[in-house]
Length: 130
View 1 (cartoon, rainbow, N blue to C red):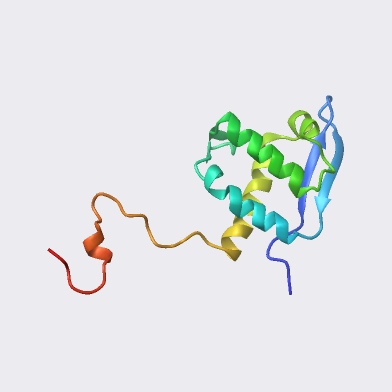
View 2: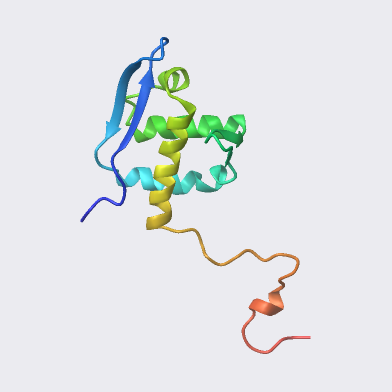
């Protein structure tokens, strides 16, 4: 079986913006998929600006994403290292890579939510009750 996406990696930079180290995962463990599915809805409203940086993200989502990155790399990078040394663009690229994988393996329910213009009569089977 082939991998659906390339290995995961994140570059950590030092105070002088020089590369300090790169953490990688050559395989994508099943638990990452499971955890990504668990947090998918909480992160789905993140919007990116033209430069790729988040423009609609709250503190809780940032913390959730940081914890997720620590989990992805099996604690080889600490929360503090990620907060101090990971670029925003690299974290968002990692997020996008993982959620692209999630979408390939387990797409969200394709049935659209009911809206005020769609009502239950349109989705019921059988005769319409009055």
